[in-house]
Each structure stands twice: as C-alpha cells, then as structure tokens.
Length: 184
Ligand code: GAR
Image 1 (cartoon, rainbow, N blue to C red):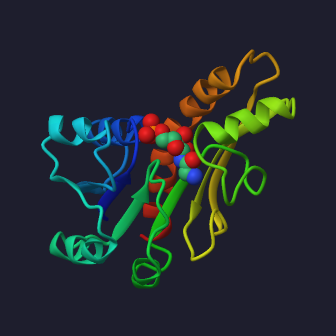
Image 2: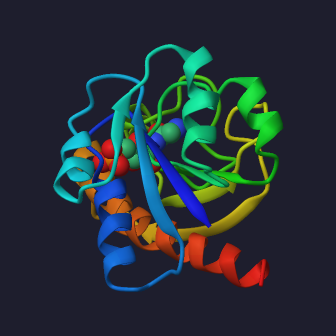
C-alpha cells in the first residue's frame, strides 16, 4: 500500500511507523505526511526524507493525496475530523489510532490527554489502545486491533498516557501488517 500518515501533534506514532517500515516490519511505503497545523512531529518526516506538508485547508487534502497516488491513510494523532469527501473516497482504506479501549472513552471531546484524564478520574484498572477503520462518525468504525494494559499502578494521567503510547506504537504497525495480509 502507498500510505499517507496524517498527524497533529508530537508524532511518536509516526516515528514508530517510520522505524517499523525501515526494519521491514510491513511492506507498505509511507510516501506522504500531512499535518493540519505546524505539528512538532513533522520533524520525523523531514528526517526520513518523506514529503511532508502542512495543509490547513480541507479542500486541498484530496488533491494532495491523489498527487501522491495514496491508496491508504493512517491517522496517527490527527485531531481534526476527516472531511466526508475523503472518507467516501477512501472507504475501508483509512485507519485511526485511539488511546482507549473503544467504545469506551471515544467520541466527542475524547482525544489525547482528555482520554487519560477521564480514565484516571474513573479509577479504571485497564486501559489500552484501539486501531479502527474510519467512517463518517467519530471513533466508530470496525476495530482492526485492540490491546489492553494494566494501569492499576499508574499515579497520574501522564503515566497512563506513556503506558498506552507504548502499546499504540506496537499495534499501529501490527494493524498495517494485518491489513496487508488480509488483502493478499
Ligand atoms: C496518541 O495517543 C493518539 O492515540 C491520540 O493522539 C496521540 C498522538 O500522539 N489520538 C487521538 O486521541 C485521536 N482521537 P503522537 O502525536 O505522539 O503520535
């Protein structure tokens, strides 16, 4: 698959994917990185010599994806809603990583630290990460992979974030591999 990775933040998931590709852990190629803002994580794209752009205007997204013949999109901490036009053009070809055990702690307002703060406040013993297909509803599509982590000893939402991120970095690349194998 010819992959575009979309980010908004620090891009640790993007970095994990670039490293996994370099180690040959999946066959696909990351050929485009797009951020919806001046995201810190763009540095990983520049360092790896992958074409990387900030695109704030949704109307310009589809053209860029087409310019690079992208056939699969990975949302790796992309915090903006993907325009319907793109979801409809890439049916079953967009996945998202979410830092909770969906359907718990998903939907409006649940992103990034807000998820971990709610999980911590509710004294959950387990959290985890989910990779799912993207449809036109928030955090709603079919689940590709989900993995749990014991957070009963975490003393802050930040500790939960770090535990969950470690899992995210594994299941995102595993999800790509799984989808490649399913489409052989
Ligand atoms: C990740 O924890 C990702 O799951 C989350 O944003 C973080 C981005 O971290 N995404 C969402 O909350 C989407 N609803 P990163 O920029 O270091 O990869």
